[in-house]
Amino acid sequence: QSVLTQPPSASGTSGQRVTISCSGSSSNIGSNTVNWFQLLPGTAPKLLIYNNNQRPSGVPDRFSGSKSGTSASLAISGLQSEDEADYYCAAWDARLNGWVFGGGTKLTVL
Amino acid sequence: QVQLQQSGPGLVKPSQTLSLTCAISGDSVSSNSAAWNWIRQSPSRGLEWLGRTYYRSKWYNNYAVSVKSRISINPDTSKNQFSLQLKSVTPEDTAVYYCARVGAGGALDIWGQGTKVTVSP
Image 1 (cartoon, each protein chain N blue to C red):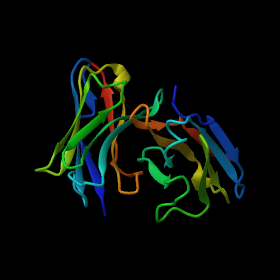
Image 2 (cartoon, chains in turn cyan, green):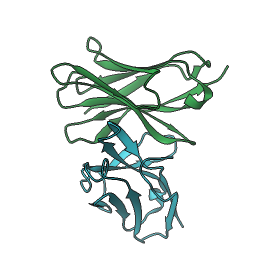
Image 3 (cartoon, rainbow over the protein chains, first blue to last red):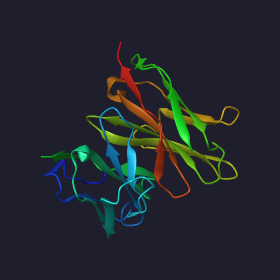
Image 4 (cartoon, rainbow over the protein chains, first blue to last red):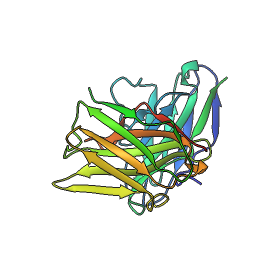
């Protein structure tokens, strides 16, 4: 059972906009910033979003993040087949004194 | 450019100790603005943070409650690397293990390539 809650799956057609939610509590998302990662099979996690809505250099602006209270969202616009991957949210948890992750969302591009 | 290079065995017997090393290039394990983490991924548990080591005038460690009694993460300043030791492993510890940096921006921004570790007789 993951500390952060994500939907197990999401889908969209090419060109569409998809959002993935991440729900937490006051000790993690409510008091710390959120990271989002993309996992492709056989590769290390790639940081997509940090500080709730900042993109590292090289990440397309099709990816955006937001946070409100104890929830966060990742939005992917102009969906492409290469976006088919697993997406995870993460935040520091002040009560557990460690990083906590969502259970991951498998994105399918139809 | 910061890179993390992992090394260690891919097969460990039950009850033995899992040992992995993460060599750092482009940064220092003794950096006052970074933290060095171990994280694992398995189909049953997803991504799970195991612990970290970091230097702020002295060395600190934090460990996940789930592994606290079995884990040790240690820096090696002479080789600019850090290591993971997980004792008394069981098949439940089978996973892909990653080392990762938390940089000055506060994000898990640099990851190692991952090591698939199987616990089996």
